[in-house]
Every structure is written in structure tokens, then in C-alpha cells.
Image (cartoon, rainbow, N blue to C red; front, side, top):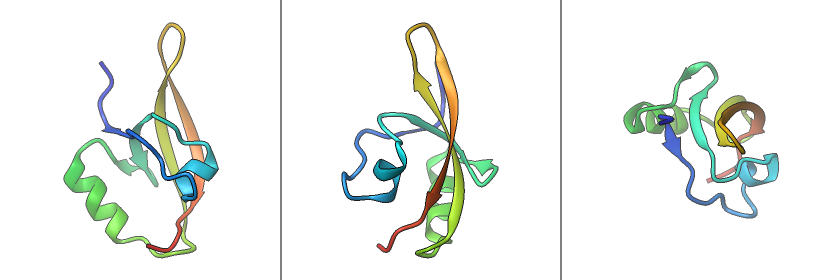
Length: 77
């Protein structure tokens, strides 16, 4: 089993969706652990529109989960 923050749906006009993040599992952001909801929420709240961050996700492939890294520009909330 993979652990992290499960993306159930990405907003179609949002930065995650536009970057290519789908129904993936976020494992870290900017090298910080993204696998716990509290830590992930704290990281998100510290970001500002226009910040460029790295996000790693696990994507369920044919035979296994594969880690993919994305560069995301944070959007306005």
C-alpha cells in the first residue's frame, strides 16, 4: 500500500490539474513530507500565489506505483 495524501479530484482550472496531477498520491512537497494531513495543510498554508514548488506523487501503474515529480506554480486561493 502507498501512503500519502490521496488526490480524489483536481479542480480542472487549478494548478495541480494543469500540471498533470491526477488521482495520484502526494508523497512530498518541496522535499518536505506530504504524507500526513496536518503537515501537508501547514505546507499549503505557507505558500503564496506565484510560488514555484516541487511535488512528488505516486501514480498507480499497470503493475506498481511509480513516483513522478511535478513543478507546480501555486495559484491564488
